[in-house]
Length: 253
Image 1 (cartoon, rainbow, N blue to C red):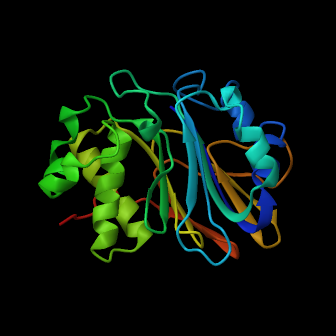
Image 2 (cartoon, rainbow, N blue to C red; image 1 turned 45 degrees about the horizontal axis):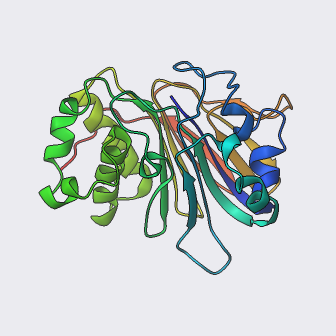
C-alpha cells in the first residue's frame, strides 16, 4: 500500500524529483511496477521539503490523486529543496480518506511516511498504544495505523532516542502486536534519511556524487539502483548509505 520517496542532496525542483523521472512517484500513483499490495495510489498524496536556513519543513498534502491536483505541477516547477519526503497513498478500508491521513506526517524537524498496513487495526496495536500517554492517543492526526505508528516513533524521539532506534523500536513493538504487519517506515530530519523494510520493496541510488534517493521502487531504469532486503534498516546521508539488519526484538520502555 502506498509509495514513498526521500531525497537528500543539492537543491532540485520537486518537478525534477517527482514528475520528470520516467517511473517517478507521480507516475507510481497510477502505474507502480513493484507494489505488492494494491494497484493504484489515488487516495491522497503529500510532499514535505526543507528550505535553506529553516529546520522545520513545509508540507503540501491533499486528499485526492496527485494527478488530479490542479496546483501541484505549478508548485513543483518552482519549489526547490535539498531535502524532500513525498508519498502517494493507497488507503486501507476503514481508515478514512481525509487529507490528514496522507503522508508525510510531521513534528518539529521530522517528516514521516508509512508504506504498509497493520492487520486487525485498530485493536491489533494494543501494546504499542499502551506505551503512549492517553493524551497522545486522543490527538492522533488521523484514525489510521500510520498515524499511531508515527505517534509512537515521535514519543521515542521526544525521549531522546535517535531516529534509527525510534523507527526500529516502533517496528518491533508493532510486530509484537501484529506479526503480519507490513512496516516500511521512512523518515527524515532534513540531514539524514532512515527507512525500515518489512513487507514491501525499497531501493536507493546515488542521485549525484553528493546526493541520494531512497524510494519504494526505482524511479527509472538507469543503473545504480540497489534493492534493500526485507527486515533491513537503512540510514542515508548525502555522504553515504548503510544497510543493517532490522532489530525486530528491540525492548521498548
